[in-house]
Length: 107
Image 1 (cartoon, rainbow, N blue to C red):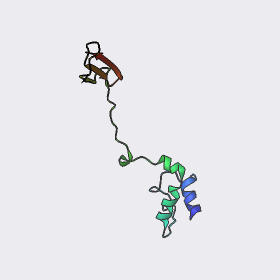
Image 2 (image 1 turned 90 degrees about the vertical axis):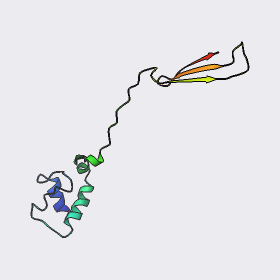
Image 3 (image 1 turned 120 degrees about the vertical axis):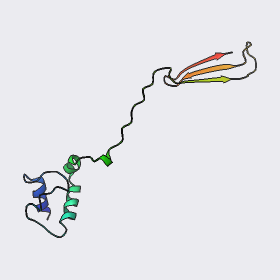
Image 4 (image 1 turned 60 degrees about the horizontal axis):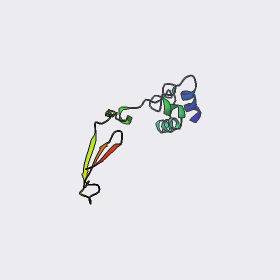
């Protein structure tokens, strides 16, 4: 059985199309476990696994890359009151989340 599968699959007569497209039946051969044996044979064929088309259910969905310019996404925090230092009791912190730019100002 394996030699028939090999000749109908890997030789000039057959091609590497996967388990669903085999030339065994067209060549006139049949046995009771033909479909199970051919599926197992093709599942172990490295070339078939690479050639078989990817179906829609196996594709990963595409997601768009979000384009953000510098200084588009800001974070502003007002901290305090703290004990007075040089007449300053508050700190204003501004962060650009795209470039990770941080500015802090004592107020």
